[in-house]
Length: 119
Image (tube, rainbow, N blue to C red; front, side):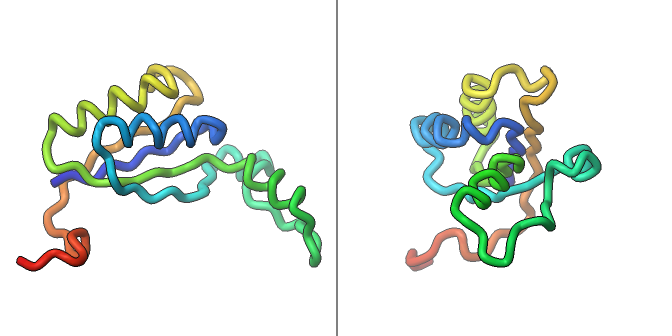
């Protein structure tokens, strides 16, 4: 089993990416708001100026400054290749600037992934 972590720089592509992953058989993924060091240094990331009683617009503006980090698991390397291809079909070639970072890590143990199934 493998752990796949993808940090996508363009949050507007999230829905399209999730749809592409779903079409190839990814049934579960977790999405997080994230920001990198460059954005933090440029004061585009985490904000401390949100008012005590924020409006919906305040939250919308804040969420657009964040990347999206999506993670899931894959059972084998063929699925990794499918996920990578689907990802690049949405965001473009990952060797290009500002597309994202795609990492694959081996999983030595996993607990809680198969909820509701008896061994």
